[in-house]
Length: 500
Ligand code: KG4
Ligand code: ZN
Image (cartoon, rainbow, N blue to C red; front, side, top):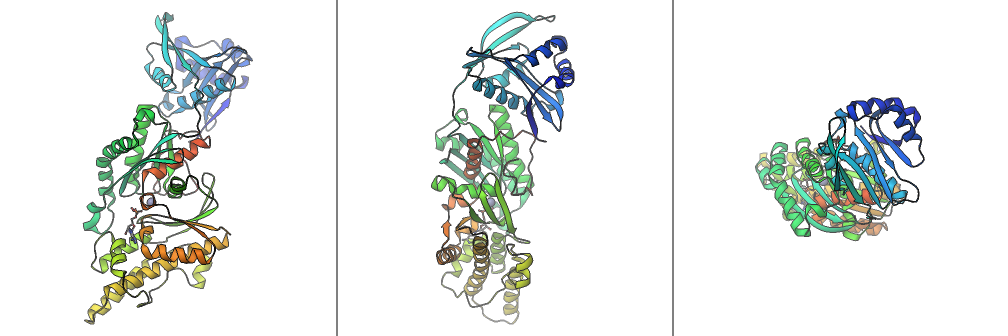
């Protein structure tokens, strides 16, 4: 549930007092004190609301003309602690202190309240003194803490991105639009004997790979966790169990280091990969994302605010079709490179395989959708028939004709989308982009239609953490608040949800 932060007013007093009393018991302020605090011109009190329910509040005081601000109080309802609400309140207070011209912020905290002290430390507060037996009647000391307001700009945040939606464990690090590290460990070979990704095996492999991949990425970027400004993680779409590993790890990292976390959409990440290649994303663009797990056609008018799913596969993903046909032809896994290899010198027009969802009636209802299961069946029938008749057939010709059918549909539909929406740009992403024929036809067709073709380097096309970090950095640079820790792994996350 989203948390809304807004300024408090006198009408909120009864609700505030309930939370004040339950949070501070003996130390609770009397209602009259709170009332005058809310009314005073030099104070700023804010509330955290979830579905209109008060779940936290905080207050700041800053006298005009002074360089100092004081945090007066902060409270989060007991059942809502540990979800990042305190951090959101602190963010808002710090911003207000800055806006009111403060150079330093002070606060007092009970010596026995280590949770609050930890939160303050995240915001750079250091203990500068102690007031003995300040809190009565229990006689607990107060720690005085202070932070200097750094004019840290958000122009080039260092973001660590974690990707575990399918079979690649990826950790990437970026500084703004610049790629610092992109480490990937694939569990592909573990799935080879099954001819496709086995979710449970992928999830276990992520668990094993994540820490070494994370360490390697930090090493490659020559950074420590301290240097990271924020953590980004794929929370969908993808395999539920696989996503959970990355989401769990990212949340743990965020809590342990106190760094903000951004939950990012995997498909939008693929589009963001282009930023790391050329320094920015040119929009609008049509994006064709083709991998073992997805086949999606997107219209991206604005990366963070306006991404539309035009169509997707209604059965197998394009890469999955390559993998299945490869098996039918007795070739190994992953199928894409194998089919590319045997199709090299062969005849792509030897067999006219069906082009899914391209008949006029399909184009009305499924103009931008794809279907590859009929094609896969047609290839299997062709092979069975030849074998049953004891006929010789050319594996190369079948592979080349199959590949031609897939590429034909993918590029035709992508080019139609560019024309229909008058978008002069096509971006490709996903592992199938390695396909040599796909690249060739895309190049030819884009050139013929005056469309700019963008294909990021292959290491950024396949699933990777750097593209997720890139979206995290874009969100920060756009001033977006971090995600709260209550987001979860969502295997069917819609592409319209760029950040959860
Ligand atoms: O993006 P990716 O690495 O991640 C997952 O989907 O996990 O894509 C892997 C898919 C596999 O299905 C593989 O067969 C396909 O990309 N692929 C190719 C080629 N290289 C990899 N498909 C067609 N032609 C290729 N050369
Ligand atoms: Zn992907």
